[in-house]
Length: 543
Image 1 (cartoon, one colour):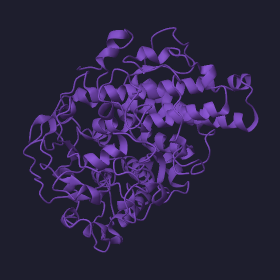
Image 2 (cartoon, helix red, strand yellow):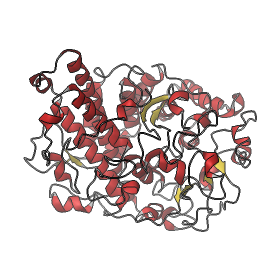
Image 3 (cartoon, one colour):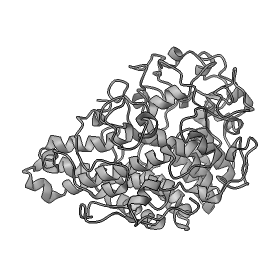
Image 4 (cartoon, helix red, strand yellow):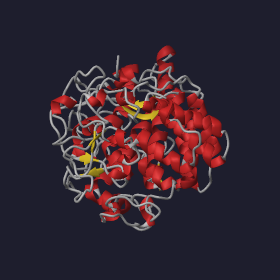
């Protein structure tokens, strides 16, 4: 089945309901369903595991909205889901994305004047903390002695043991995101006594060491790369997260780990993943079939079974507005006129590549001309000069996310996307290896070869191949390959271009020509509500 791990029966009261403060990370269930009931059978463990995976895809227990997981976070569709708010935080402050809407806090990102009460920041923080809470509870309840005490043995016990390693991966992933975005979050594991105390704060460097140790500890427990059910974590997912972790180690800890990034990128590259031959199919509705050999770890969606207003539904609706193609031609029921891009991104592509798609859909599916087919932009009727942030037509349309299948047919539900989101894919591992090679001046020939594999797919031939690379080229190539996939803020910070005057883009810091902004904005603030209830926490500098 395509996505059966997230076709789950919702388990109410799986663990502490997330209110609006992290003290709830360390509480017992507050309703009538106890852990002993939830975990009394193998099916209960499966449902609980599905909830942890599902928390990355959905915002609550009723689709498309309702029974929000995050009590106290308003506007569930906008602010309570992981992927939508993660994208806001990773893309909106950068040169890759603009948003037209005036919803609370959204324009703060491009203006770089967000506060600790910004609802998107608050929503992302609590979603990640909620994920940690779910994972901690599962890990605690799936210890061998707990499972045995409930009369579960044999193959069922082994399956739960496997689930436990996946829960540890998902917790490590959540802590990685907290470390990347917030630096110094509260910290709780399965070993903390429930309700005994408020969570302590962990430093960014300490959290780096913890995430690294967890991923290495489960490396031997996870199933082999590409051997697990699609959408579930395996060794490849752990290696990919380690590669990304090490690439950014200097930012997180002050110490470079590029050689380690190369080692773990190589582990993924050597594990049998392959590039899908058509870049434009990577984010279509049937990408679980067409591009799955490139995907290392995904957040799974299904238009009929995982309805929500975040995730891929957000991308496939908010990307479109007039004068772009009719909604029906894009596989959706409406155009939300929300997100678009700026010339800083489109100028990274050759001119013929940037203007090849004005006669959608005919030219959009043309694979004969030697242009960079990663450029999926709409210029007709748009104003690349961007005189205003809140007008959708001021900017350049992006056609990367479509609720269409590779044969041109539409997704199962025009209101909700079928496409899966690739958290990690093989192309990123090539780019990590190449950047680490350049920064250490080792294995440059191999790195150039990996870059040319990406460019041969993009151009359809060797016309775009390169013979040399440097760090600046890699940053540009990452934008061409990974734009709108939630990595740009992290990349710009690693290159010291996010807040500095080294690189300006349209409306950076709220000025049309761009400006240098405050250096402390490389981290987001902890929500003010948590500081109020937990005296163990100290706010990040500058807020």
